[in-house]
Image 1 (cartoon, rainbow, N blue to C red):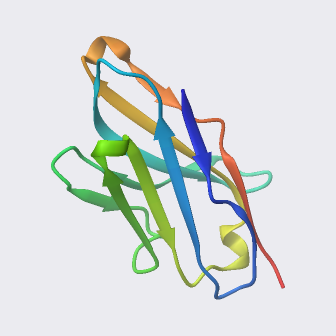
Image 2 (cartoon, one colour; image 1 turned 90 degrees about the vertical axis):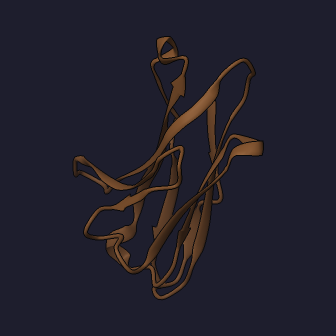
Length: 116
């Protein structure tokens, strides 16, 4: 099970730090991803980080968001700075695993609201 935390209400220009933790044992987390779904819009890719630390960002996240991981805690972290009203929405994490037979797991998402 993946559980996100750290969402909430923040003013434009502010920051939030989202976390996603997977519980369980007997596996290793490979890739970690964050996605954003604005109200009434399709889900979009925000950021990813591989098991060797390589990161990728969606256009809206570049220069403002930073993804990191803490493997000892099976945790993905998304540091979001300079938040804008259009960053409002549901943020979900996804992880892939070794062994690959575990497939991919999704969190239920956490709400971020950027508003004055």
